[in-house]
Amino acid sequence: MIDIKVKKGLKGGIVLFLLLIFSLNGFGQNISVEDSLGSVTINVGKIYITGNKKTKAEIILRELDFVEGQQISAREFSQSIVLSQQKLINTRLFVIAEVVPLFMSDTQVDILIRLQERWYIFPLPIFKLADRNFTEWWVNQKRDFARVNYGVQLYHFNLTGHNDKLIFRSQFGFTKQYELQYQRPYINKAQTLGLTLRTSFANNKTVATNTDGHRLQFEQSDDINRRIFSSSGTLTYRPSFYSRHSIDAGFSRASVSQLITNANPDYFQNGEQLQKYFRLSYVYSWDNRDYFAYPLSGNLFRGEVSNYGMGIFNDLNMFSVRGSTSNFFDLGGKLYLANSLEGYYNFSDEIPYMLRSGFGYRPDFIRGYERYVVESNAFVSNRSEFKYKFLSGIQELNRRSLIDQFRTMPYAFYLKAFVDMGYAGDPIRSTTNNFYNKELMYSAGLGLDIVTYYDFVVRFEFSVNRQKQTGFFVNFMSAL
Image 1 (cartoon, rainbow, N blue to C red):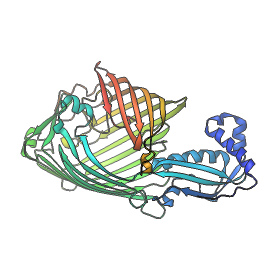
Image 2: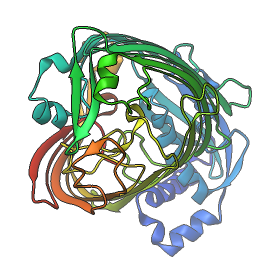
Image 3: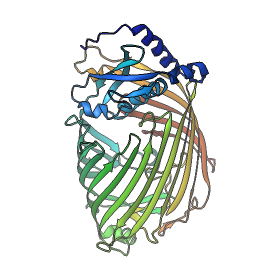
Image 4: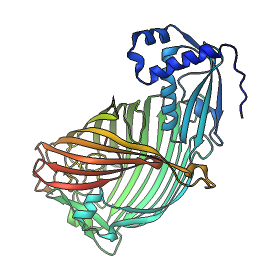
């Protein structure tokens, strides 16, 4: 337990702290309060950290908007307390993160950071649908349990206390896959460079080979019809809290059986059964959202350029760009507004079927059209939501649990209304009955979002699209 002796200026410090609280809770529009905060300079003293049983102190200090010995205005200090707490939660290392100012006098403040770490080791069973979404499996594939993946996946978060992560996957069922991945967010003393390494091998007996009427057509047999090996490394540069640059370089080798090329000679192009290529991509993102898994305020901008082939092997030559901007607004009174605008363009004249993009393939979708894939070399979409948080809290699970991280469960429920729209350009060769291409797609609906333990999100949505098709859909990640 930390013993901190409070000096005589405690009374003045309490008054200033109350001013900070008023500012944090929306009273900042009062000019006299703002002037009072702006005229006071805070001296940041010692920073104390409790609850970090494994996480290294430098990982925690990296997320703070202030350092020991810094002089900062009271107004900026009040904002930095909130932002620092949000950024600690967004590391996904902690169930609880509290940043508490301890006033030694009316201008001198120490900081107490109270943390409760997450449980970091998860040997989880794999049981998930192989299809692109729940609706594809439930409606188009008629709830076929042969299209399920199962196995075991081991997550070891915060492996060495540096917010690094090790993942091993052993998967069977529809797609047999082995994958190993290691991620280290900081590899240099300045904590600006990070590295991710991954390698995987997968094979399938059932493979999507064509698209007809915006629905996938499959070929299958008792033999393995596709094998894919891939390996890659990603170097990230994080010069500030909110901006990130990433360069990803990788190699892929894929082969298919004669059955696949007979069904679609453009699966790899020109009837080839083997495709090898290097890929290189650059991504820039600016992200100051409050919570990554389910943001309620802040902004996200992301831009990406990718090159597949790079003139090596001559199996592939494909260049594409992608951009998105998402904005989240806390309107007060438990009301929230969100909007996301995204666009994609592929400059290649010929795109292999295996590498096609469009609505219906992750991460691109228009709600109300979950049954379909709309493939194109160019598309744009906009998704908007207006929602109300009607219930939230923390549920006591088992106070006698030996694991602190599983004694409580936070939860929040949101009612929402949404409107989506999108436009896809010319269809890609070898697709047929492309009635949604070059047509404005739009939909509207109502939904319920549930957000709970360890960033788990489930969406229940009812929608109607332009063609007056209605549907009830279930998904397991935030829509924006």
